[in-house]
Image (cartoon, rainbow, N blue to C red; front, side, top):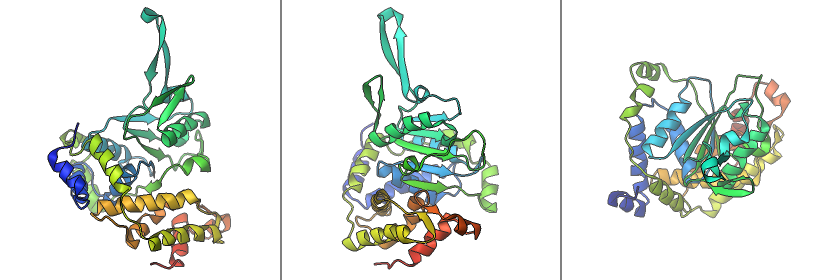
Length: 322
């Protein structure tokens, strides 16, 4: 699917990106109630060629959001339900012998899609989790010494099961760090829940229509790189990251990759709101999503009832805003 003349004109005008995002949000509102900020953050990660992790209790619409985004953006979608006995070949595929051709043929696994929804990634064993890692970082998979490129754009939305303690394999810090953001899904408000039971959800997903295309997303990804970040904003980001390393509230601070991610996601957020430059509010809005999975709160602080978001708030308050 190529760009329409209207979409091409919008791409040339950075302020037109906000109109594209608005049309995406309006279409998704047919089935999704609330969660506007969550969806904007997911789009920001997609626009920066990154990946997101979503944590939330069952039944809060994580699968519906991922499926709806794929339909509205006209992207190929695959869902992978992780289990403890899952093998890497179940994800990336394997070579199958074809008797009629007396040769082996590679059968692609579900990882070959534009949007891959990995449900309960912490149920997959470490060996399988590592298969996701290569795909997410490199954009290709290697099987029997042969390399296969993944489709573009390629975007992973992974969910974590936050309540189970048996049959799960915690992700190592190195792999968690590969996700640009960790997003939390909360319970809807009473008004939103009434709207949900009144008919929104999977029952209306067939009403969704594509308002974008793979080529449009690729063009936006290139445009994000051109968004301007002032030196003062860059210093603000670095000061925040370094403050996490020096904080006595944290056992583990954020890495330089966190600073890079914060800058990139801030640029995407600026673009979403129709600006060609980043402002401090862009950075403030994505601090928690980009840091909460990259830092580790000291046990004694957790015993005081202070969570990771609360610690981040305390640290950020001590950093001067440009």
